[in-house]
Length: 137
Image 1 (tube, rainbow, N blue to C red):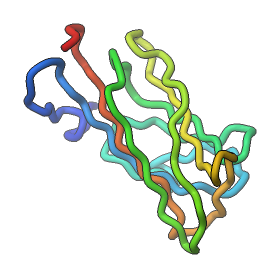
Image 2: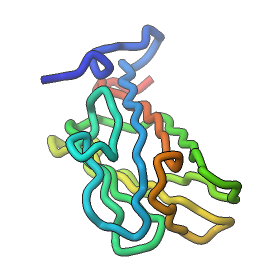
Image 3: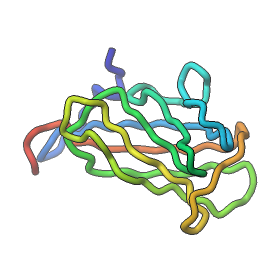
Image 4: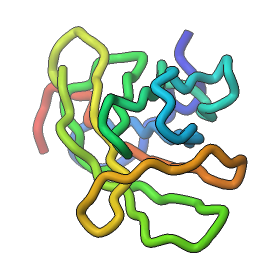
């Protein structure tokens, strides 16, 4: 079932745009998938899960659906204590296919992927914009 968020279309010239917004709560070095069911992923839909890979501060995001092209993304980190961390995005896979899109999110201290301790005040929020049209603008 598609969510209300995924059904919204921004009106503009060019391709149709879909936005997916989500927040996940890293659990240190745990590689257990972060999902809506276990409470470590908040989204109105569009994201199946977020899983920390075997590398510190590196997360694989798996979406529920396929999209033709990514046209924008932004991420922020909320911290329980002062730290110099930023969000960076890696490669997007399965764009333009029938498979769900996956992509990498990094938490970086300068240029080094860094784990974020489990804390209810530690969170990563992302907004991704996709083109869901076969026509290019």
